[in-house]
Image (cartoon, rainbow, N blue to C red; front, side, top):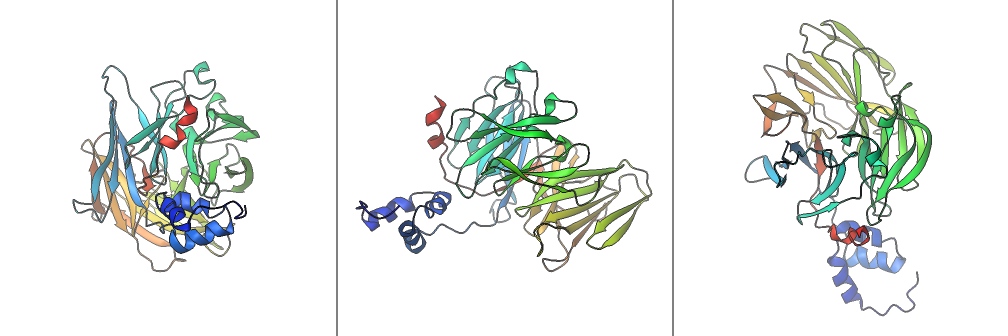
Length: 401
């Protein structure tokens, strides 16, 4: 694009730009050099602040998003958004899929087979319902929010919802993924021949890419949502085996893997986990509720293709679980436990200075952590990164008719 025919006064152009969200201004910098210079000099997008933590809880007739905010004058937690089903004869089951730029993406697994996808912006109060999955009425399949992922594409500024139809096959296999781009009218099938997914490990989107773990020989698949193709597969940092559980997670905007020894394993277990060039031996014993977890992060060091050990968590005599998929809140690591009909979220201050060191956290009955929140509604209560936005959802409604 050149400046020929461009007669809009710069002051008027700047006034328009300042009315747009920061995410939109970042995209408009790519239009041409003139726009980039004007935006950088007079309408520079605000630098993203540190994300807060959103905890989502739902019941049979309502859903609530809570914000864990250390800077809140009313305390460390406040209610951010609530939905209540007006008809009590209608069963309601909402699960959070993910958050992007302050927009919440949920799946109501009781509304229709395949689940009804709903977007919400707590700041503007808007909601947006997506069209049903094609062919979703062919199977009685409810509540599989785990098969969805919500992503923001930083290059184009688009939002996409990805669905993995791996529940149709007992082996977890599928040959297409289904993609919905906000602003379009329908879902699209994108070929991924011979793919498979282990939903128990989670499906997560980070920086315009969606990751999942294959069945059989476990590998991490990277699906680029800009190009809509699989760009890489790589082994897990530790091979899953008897007593081991692996989950994908978000570690400060990078892909992470939580490798845990199942609490139901025998009392004395020797866990041998490869860390860099050596072995870490952990004697996890004395209590059936002992649990040892290691969190690995991809590309957190100088080698972008290498897994690095970032956190080691030892739990002794407690039933707490690492919060997922977002579990690092500022200088705290988050865990949760269901107790006395409430979900309690604990914070544990990280130890170990330096970005390249592996932080260690020890949790016990004597040191259970700091209780940050007591939530009603459900025992799962996933946690997500959240940044408030005024970006409207109404701009995506025009093609829904």
